[in-house]
Structure formats: C-alpha cells, structure tokens
Amino acid sequence: MPKKQQISFSKSGILASCEKRSPFLAEIEAVAMSKKVITREEWERKLNDVRIRKEDMNKLVMNFLVTEGYVDAAEKFQMESGAEPDIDLATVTDRMAVKKAVQCGNVEDAIEKVNDLNPEILDTNPQLFFHLQQQRLIELIRNGKVNEALQFAQEELAPRGEEDHSFLEELERTVALLAFEDVSNCPVGDLLDISQRLKTASEVNAAILTSQSLEKDPKLPSLLKMLLWAQNHLDEKAVYPRMNNLSTAMLEDPSV
Image 1 (tube, helix red, strand yellow):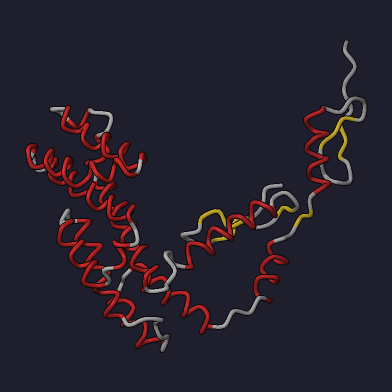
Image 2: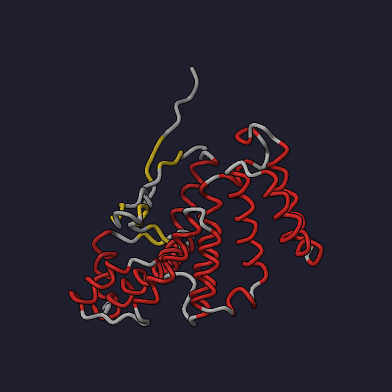
C-alpha cells in the first residue's frame, strides 16, 4: 500500500505537503508572502483620509461638459454649483455645430463654419483640411455621384497627394471604393461607416479646441486612465480591494 502523504497548514495559511511540496503551491506561497495584504477596512480608511475639495470636483465636471460640448448641461451645472467655465459657452455651441455638420455628412457646411470661427485653423493644418476633403469625397461616393467624385478627387485631392505620400495612400484607398459594386464586402468599406465620420469630427473638434488654447481632451478620462495605471502597478506589490468596474466605482474584495 502506498504511503499516505501528510498534509499540514503553514503559518501563512497556504496548503503544503510536509514530505513533498508541489512546485505550484510553493509558487503561490512565494507570491503571497511577497505581497502586502490590505484589508477593506484599512483601504477604506486610507481613502477617507484623502481630502478633495468640492470646488476641484466641480471644475473637473465642468471641464468635461465644456470639452465634450454639453452646453445645456454646463449651463445648468453652472447655476447649481457656481462653477465657472473657462470659456464663453457660446463658442462651445459654435464648435458643436461644426462637429454635428461633419457627423451628418455636411462637410462643406462644416468647412465654412470652421472658417467663420477661425480661418487659420485649416490654413495651418493641412492634414485636417485633407481629411475634411477626403470626407467630402466619401460622401459623394456614398450618394452615388461617381463622376463628381472622380472629378473632385482629381482636382482637389490629387495635388495634395503629390505633396504628401501619406495623403496619396489615403486617397487611393478612398477612390478604391468606386471599384466595388457591393461596398459592404470590399476591404475599404469601413470608410463608409459612421465611425469614419466620427473620427473626422473628433479631429476637427480637437483642432478648434487647440486654436482656443484649450485641452483637446477632457481631464476626467485621463484621470481614470491614471487610476487604472496606478492599480496595475500596485497589483505587483499588494493585494487590496480593487476597483474593477469604473462605471460603478465599487471596490471588490481581494481573492487571496
């Protein structure tokens, strides 16, 4: 009869064999012994010790509303909290009109509105202007205006492609849409997706914000990315109640 293996518990609480320890269990014990375990009570106490001013939180919310263009919400939040936006909210309305025009496929109208806001935006940003013109070409193709699309590509976009090789590659990829009767199955069909409009609209929005000496992105998403980065680094050193779902901000007890 084979000899029975004697089992015992070490002080660390990890199951181990007295006669022969499993390499897997030994590895678990080594990891657990090397990390600090922080209880929920201790972690929540540390969080409660952090003092954040309400004014700073209000500024963070206002920054998000203004940058993302939620004018009505920003006005209501201003009345309720007393937080002042960094810019005139009327300029946000103008910026959102440009963004909406691109999202709806009205690129010519968007270009006109950008020039009304600040003509230097497109004059000093050839890549943005090319992408807007590219979006115009996409809309012509979407609407079945083949001859007009070819003429527009030849007269407006081809010269810019000769100046910049990256523009030429994008132009060739866009014109390739005309070679397929069923664009839903063609390799460049993604250009006709709504995501392409949104991408161009976001680029225009960022350029307008930059021209107004404002940040292109709201601070809140950046802070959330920093939170995830900090947690990932802390995971290497400690076991603690983690925030896995940012939408609920609920702490989850560690599994040890």
